[in-house]
Image (tube, rainbow, N blue to C red; front, side, top):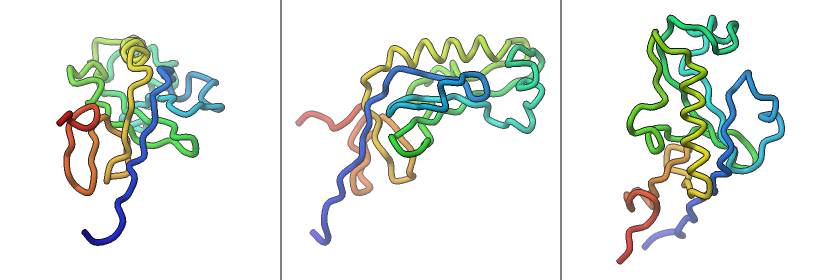
Length: 139
């Protein structure tokens, strides 16, 4: 084997989820905190002006997790495989956020690993090999 093995960085989720441009607590994050934001804020700007209480737009929320130094992308589909983070034109997106927040609170203590793409996921990748969901498979 050539070179040294590289340690895979992991963090534990705190269970706290915030909404960008809505919660002030996001200014003093703790490691493992998550914030959700709209997938395209320029297109969905009227939602921001309406305090996330506007109908008539469709989209979804993306997520970032705080690793102690910076906000990094978090793979949303690990937690919302049922597409809970998407909202339609007939829904108020703030209610979608509340559902997402409830789900993420239940994930407190879940380990997420930094992937080769520099974002965090519940799947552990090591030296280009997929090791399975929620960490290494037992032998």
